[in-house]
Amino acid sequence: MSKNMKELLIMITGDYVVRDSNSRIPDPNANSVLIRNGRVLAIGDSKQLESEFGVDVFYEQPNTIIAPGLVNTHTHSVQSLLKGIADDKSLLDWLKDAILPGEATFTSEEVFVSSLIGYMDLLSHGTTFANDMLTVNYSDKGINAADMIGIRVKVGKMLMDMGEGIPLKLIQDTDEAIEESYHLIDRWHLKSSLIEYSVNPRFLVTCSEKLMRKASEIVSSDPTLSYHTHANENLEEIRLVKKLHGMNYIDALREYGFLGSKSIIAHGVWLSEHEKYLLSSTNTAVSHNPSSNCKLASGISDWLSLKNRGIRVGLATDGAPCNNTMDMFREMRLASFLQKVSKLDETVTSAVEIFDMATYQGAVALNHPELGKIRPNSPADIVVIDISSPSHFPLHDLISHLVYRASGSEVLMTFVNGELVYDRFRKNPFVKLPSSVISHAINIANRYALDKPWKTRDPN
Ligand SMILES: [Zn+2]
Image (cartoon, rainbow, N blue to C red; front, side, top):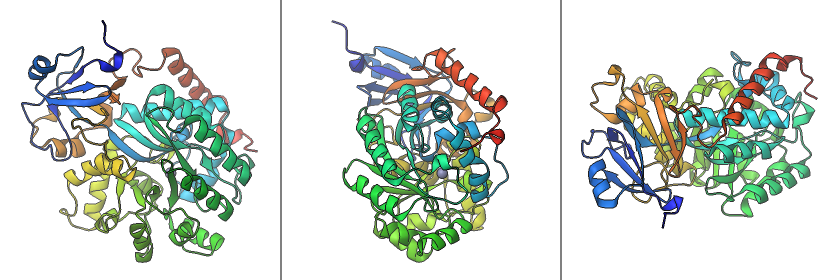
């Protein structure tokens, strides 16, 4: 009798396997990972694994490193159509002049396409698990895109109910926003093993106290729901929040019920000692976004001081328009360099610490400690990285190599939950998507840029 697809023994073979941030020395006896039922069964030499277990499906890719998929703790896949329209601006101008008017113009089809392009960017650059904020409207379409392409996500609609100078289409009635959130939770939360719902108030500049308190009620109603917002990214934003809410940022988040072990704030660039204490004492996680913080000139986050207080810190790209890619390999390199140069101390962090932050620590920050490493019984979220170029040699230290030399564009294959979802050598690289969907997405994206430039649209 033929085996059920899930029962099939799948083997990925390359040259070396990086199990986690401790896999620095290339191990000549471990070139393969064996997968069954979406989980890692064993790691070892291909011939030995084959004779011990038998193999049904082979993915053999010479001149590669097999590594854990990267965990991206803060993204906006849906902003992908706005990439390249908002360079050289600071956070609040970037939002008000370009990003919010852009999001307001999106049709439901554009939300689908923009999110899909974002997920393609993530998977093709090695991210297997993303913590993703959509926009206010048509979030169902964005989650549908994640479901179709097969990426692992925490994802949810963007909550906004106020804000000066913000397109009316993005300011939703508070009760309506909450009701829609419940509908999306019913429809998507844990309906597949890859999709979890996350409640996402944008930030305190666009969220009323009422909205924040009601959002907190949703999160407390179910222990499996997550909470995700932006905070303390930019000094002007912090001043505005104090004016609007009469409190320091993190004090306000505590007052509204946001802080806690299911919550993650994106950025946390400017935090007082008191605010760091609040994050640490409530076990709230922080997402570090080095490229976004540089491009928007927000500042350099002292994430090491957060980590030293026991705060869970993960790495992230943020959305495409403030980056302009979602390549976590670039973030690893930059996260290390920024700490070293800002403290004038080259020893302050290491490739090992950075790789851990981009994989396992990110998974821990998102309350999924079973992810981020390749080890027996862990879900098989795996990337295969090309090292065929002579510039990849010698390989003294695989972790140093992945952090400082490798690039997301060298990712050849991406597996999520043991399933191949990206294969650069195929005509249709996003394996689960029909090629007609990919060409349709590219057509819509081109049309968005050429026929209907965002500047000429009426956001209301
Ligand atoms: Zn963001």
